[in-house]
Image 1: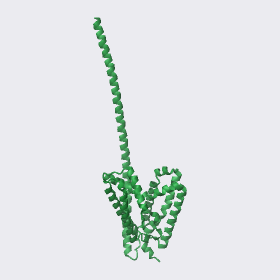
Image 2 (image 1 turned 45 degrees about the horizontal axis):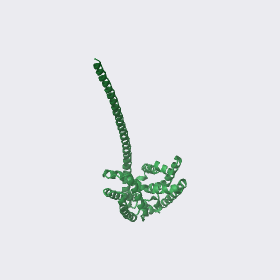
Image 3 (image 1 turned 30 degrees about the horizontal axis):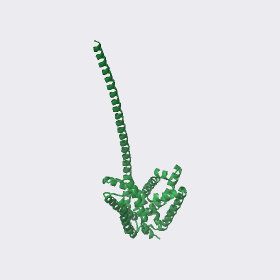
Image 4 (image 1 turned 90 degrees about the vertical axis):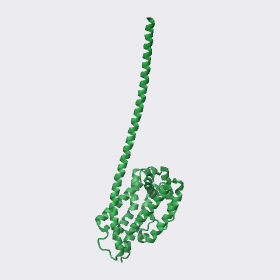
Length: 336
């Protein structure tokens, strides 16, 4: 009897120990499973938040693209009509009143508004948070710099609009050209005083290389669509290489550098001879740039880069020729 009781006691103890062990093991497993589940939930939440951020960013880009497309359609329609008008003017000695769209105050106001908005967008994009941090600019200094950049570029925009409207004779065009150049020089001097020599030297290079940054931003999606995305390091190296090659190249006429424009003789500056020379020199620069980036891009990326250079050159030809067609300066030269 005692042995039976002892066996029962031992079996009961074993059962209790086994239960306690099972319970602890189960609790640990449940805790582990719960932690894993919580981690998975957190990962899914993070992924959902990231996806939401990407969706919002894409929506903003889509809305911006829609607005830009509308502006471009309006401007293209106006430029197309103005181009037809000025081509007709070139074949006729006298221009019938009302043919130039920019003589219409409403049309001129719309075009000026678009040009000024584009100017402000470019300035904000140039003087961005990254540049503010790099130059250690206060909020007040940042606004001063942006205002000076408007002063630097606005007279040239006003001159181009006045020229395209056909409002100026040669003497008035020359006077506005001299003022635009003087304003640019004066604003540059104030920017130098605001920033100091070291920061100004950095900003000057940063501003002059803005065309290359813009082109690389445009190239980014093209490379990605071709299945050859650019790394951030490649983008920075491309910007530096393209800018350095352009700076070393000695253009006879450089339509990419507004600071070199002869605003007092834009008819000569945008002559057919000068344009043909510029495009020929641009092709030479593209060849040199393509050779320079051989060590930056992969063999698969090089053909895409070469294609984008050619496309950019063709767009440049269209822009410059349209600019020339929109300037009724030859007619102005005939005025007494």
